[in-house]
Length: 352
Image (cartoon, rainbow, N blue to C red):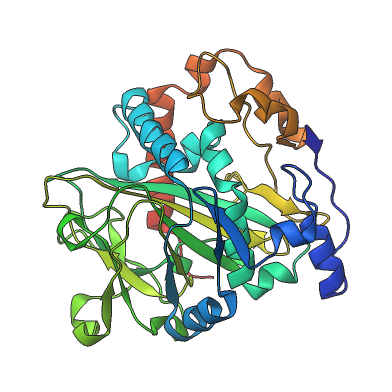
């Protein structure tokens, strides 16, 4: 296992990138973490990061196909089934950090080098930061016929971050299209400032709030992001986006992963922020350990047998993982209560 260290902020991009290259999992070198070549299904895939970054800067979003391999997609499907069975009272569109905190496979996905590399390549603030942190992650799992809409909003309006140096990766677990409620974005809207949230329950919706109304959106600027399993769409925190209800016969599940610079402050100490790569900044943020894999209790996955040996450890957080009453720590009722508190927090949040 690797124990957290918190050196001061690096003073140059070279120093920061050297720090970033000290990847927690496998301790890989900078060329391995920051490169134009990734491997998908065993094949080398060249990414034109400059072109992708230019589109993200211009439009506020970019879609990158075939980011993860079919084995990990299959494990994600198993994970969704596992969560459905384990947390029957938690709405499937509200699986987030309360569950992730105790879920080794979930965090394993967030630490995947292909995803961390993508975030780093597309977000210059991560390249000049001492490190990369996971701010939050959330499954948006819209079940057939019942999956609810998400109203027009800007993610940054919900997030207690200062500065807003954060990037979102939306990883498609299932095929996502117009029929089952794929994500839709307002192209170029990331140039606008963040708006305050307002409650909106005029229709059933996941968040119960919005930042924009339908009549404020130009239909000509709406882009529907149709994805295949393993594809990723990347978003700016200010882009206006939404999704329609799932009226189809097919599930639509995606996993959002939000990476922030370790030089960004998270103002909500209950948020389980975790270091993904590089280093922390002294005195900034309340970081958590990566969760332990608990054989016979957690979902097994490729690499689970060695996970505990190399997970990131925050000494002040380890007492949490010393408990062995797993059914109490991760009980369905406890996760349901945590979810309700999180939804209540969202209803009270204001723009920073």
